[in-house]
Image (tube, rainbow, N blue to C red; front, side, top):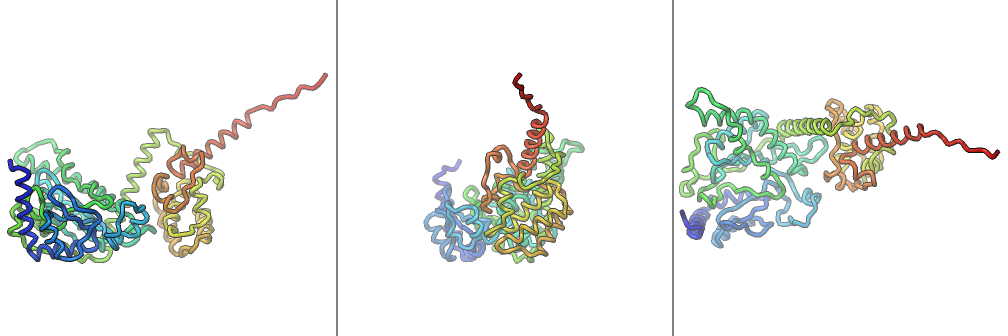
Length: 439
């Protein structure tokens, strides 16, 4: 087995020669624009944040011992301004967008090929045409759908600010979509010479897109970057020829450069994102129902007299009007809160109209009507739980003593109503004591 020091020295020599090629450096540099891009020195990453300023930076890093380069999925206004001290809201403002990155890896390259082909088919099914794919450098692939393909806003929420929540949701949705075929195809590959067999339910887990990669500031290997363990290049390949890919195609001495940058059609991935979000809501509802069933739900508890004194502090604050950015998020919370409590459409519209007048800059009536119309056709869904950032970002999270017992604004109202009714019943059943008179 090759000594680790000898292996490190060998890969550094290959890297220096490989990154001397101008076409390789330019391919990496072009892709890295507006991304956090960090060199790796065999086993250790360079300082963060970092970014490539010039094409020549790549060779300069290689001369210092850099063996590979890693980029962010997130696209930044200025990657060098990123700081670990920043709040999530500050990072959102600095983030211009994000690419959807599906990381497929397995101990067998053939498994990864099957998963990659199925994912490409699933993306095409949702009318996504501009899809990039590259070899990971080991035994997998990276599939990318560029930021330009996604709508800039959905359901009143800015898409650029929904990282990593929405791309992670898309990964989970696509996983579920291809799972059955993936099990069948991998089982066929493993047992193609048998007439009957038990399908392999474990093998597909090895090649499902990695949702861990879909996290804030997570980096992935840049196209045409080398891989330290294999000394192979992360080459871009034709999405129609994934099955034809061979390891020797990634030999750094034989690499032919092609662009990983795609000029997608504006919003071509809209249907994909919408379907993933709706699927996510359905899954959340199923989980909530299962949880309520297990814990003994109060789902059918009807509040006959829904008055503001039953509302949680965060909703009371929102109803005072939004004094800064966040009106659309607040509207999303209000609609789901009222609908979950079975408020009539007329009363909901009236309350939201009254709320909108109090905002620092009222939302357009047409926008509110479209949101109310869309939500009226959907199943009731709880507003975000109290531990989500929505309430803190809106500066409306001002918990009272009752808040510590609940996890969702709707739970607050239901439980408080139940407690008050219970107290009222007790008071009615207590008979007044008779005063004894003096004889």
